[in-house]
Image (cartoon, rainbow, N blue to C red; front, side):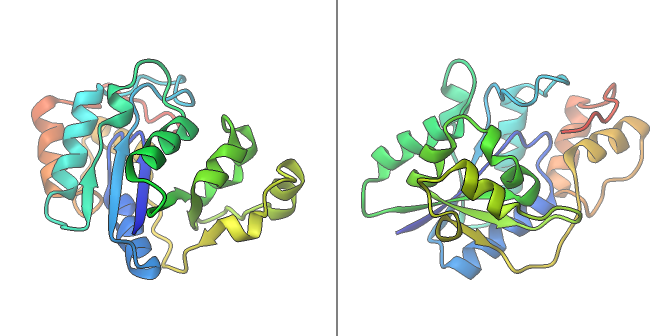
Length: 207
């Protein structure tokens, strides 16, 4: 089985996340895509992140109508920082050798792979599926030099899809300003944000 993994803070989840997951499933023949909201993200300490239970509920609302999508609480339930390598190791053990893991990320995140915790382990446990973002290109030679034991071009897959530039930090800023977010994220998520009064004091700091 081919299993897609879509990790992220999802603060909030938006239509760009959903489009990338759907496109990856179609292009790679994934049986499912597992959305994995982070618990305590080590790279997001520069701004206050919405409570894990709120981010989890937004992901559940956003994915509920797609039978290809599922939600995992594996990182939210883990104490301490959430590292991708630990999550992949747990999922690899859970699903066994007959399941091939595909970790879906944006090009901006993939470009910083060398700064990740245990990047060699990440690429050994899963193939990385990279969705393009405007202004970002993968430094393949740099990544290969930094990870000489890994065949980078065999472990990275680039999605060929329209680039949709929606950023969670910009959505938080729009919500704080009272600007419309319709068509940028699912209506159910927008309603939840309004109900819980999330992001009203957010300055839109960069993710």
